[in-house]
Image 1 (tube, helix red, strand yellow):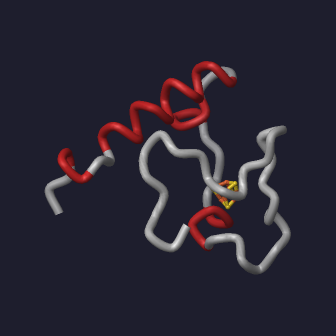
Image 2 (tube, helix red, strand yellow):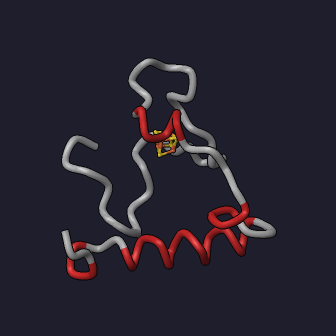
Length: 67
Ligand code: SF4
């Protein structure tokens, strides 16, 4: 996704079973490879994680950033 992944839009490499189609591929973005799961992002379970991700996507929208 050369122009970036808009909030609410799944990554083009996300499979129907929620796996990364390029996990072991050199084309996998560096930001993905460096991401370490932690409770602040992943929460207690999948539903909790989806809520947290949605909140992060909202606050990362350009209209909410000050840089
Ligand atoms: S790890 Fe990165 S490239 Fe793979 S599905 Fe997730 S966001 Fe997409």
